Length: 276
Image (cartoon, rainbow, N blue to C red; front, top):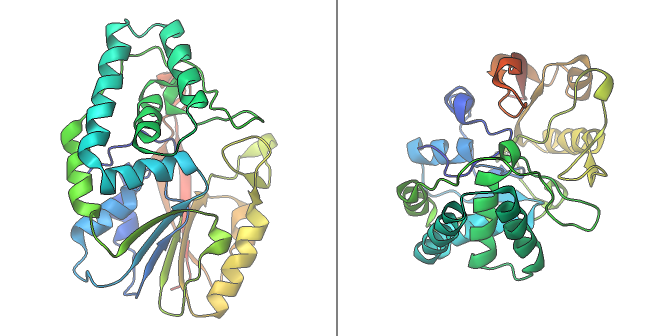
């Protein structure tokens, strides 16, 4: 199954490689959910169904989308369709985009309408980037494209995730509580390479957590017998944070799709670290 969300950093093209590395485990945790491409592929192919799945992210708009798809799919799809048609009927101009973005920022309720608006914004913002200003307003630039919507893809995802043992929550990785034998899969925002190296990550420039703090959490989970996987750029810094032992590495090449021009999209070496 292909994820219905447009999402920068999605692992859609390497989901097979990642899921085939999953060990036998108890409950499943994914605290940087994003597009959920790995989870959807995993759920579609997993044999054991009686475990709990705890899916979270610090972005409340993202979790609002997944909850709407899970619990209110028909209304969600209707509203996405209406917003998509409105935007395209207005010839998807820059002014139309800015009006829609402003309406999204002014609408305060975290409900199905907010979810539908965010879903459409991801389709029409510049390269699907997610960016907020200091006031918490979505401020990604205009994508210069018409909106698209695959209703059937959303409905298929809803069928797959409409289960009582699948739990979506807006929270940080710091607040999850995996136990021995559980699996935690993390795909956090990546450590920038070269001169742009920073510790912090989030959906804004300031950041809420840092990579070093996440690595410390991994140390604790590892000592407690939790099975761990994390993706990132292959760098000395990353391997220092997740040393061997206890971690082992698997590399793969992935072309970045969020640069401005197709010609500048080059393959970079990424890595997944595992403690099993």
